[in-house]
Length: 290
Image (cartoon, rainbow, N blue to C red):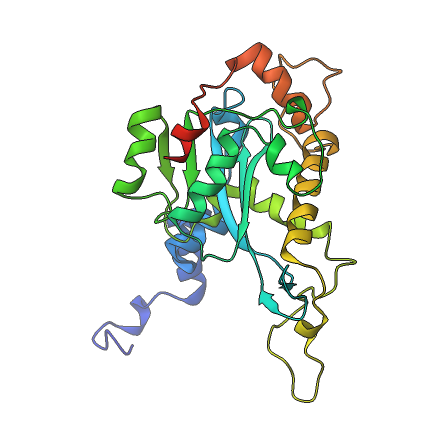
């Protein structure tokens, strides 16, 4: 009546008629899309018709890389009275096997430089890295050495002319996620929660809830006792445990996998190297650094 005052009242559809028209003319998907933004629909609502593993033939088919700020405050190695902040943790993971192939821990904001340091670890031998923090391993304990076919990363970190050397010199395809689509790297995102769960129950200085200190309340940052070196040792130990012993109950196994093959990252990696992709392409460590 407000918009079309000249229409006779007998011709104005009733509420029931409007509901019937709405239900008949629009699908459930169209109704949901009209109530949510495009980004929100793609990220949280859209139906999933496959898994990340479907797009990975074997080890090295695709690596995912992402960064997060750790839920803990750490102190300086030089003076434990100095609170140096919350470290940034980069993780690189193989999509096929879920093996964590590389990491980097520092205080730089997520950037190209920090991401490349994590990728350097992913593409080289990790024995010496672990030895620096008092962890003795053999190469077969963390066997990921070499270049993947593709790397999936956030836009910005591996976007632009800086990454062209990696693409051209080593034939690595760089894939960037759409804006506001952290779910596109769901595998590496989930592993952050797993790694942090290993130290949050007992480590002092853990961030719980809001980081804003309530008036008159205790500043939990002052509880920080763990040094940055100690934190790196914990993360490396957690990665090794994940790779060697973590059983994935929801892993998307393919039909040709043996029934007795455990759904453990290291086991899947070794099986995939033998039966799927073979050894990854490698280069001298100095070339990787450049």
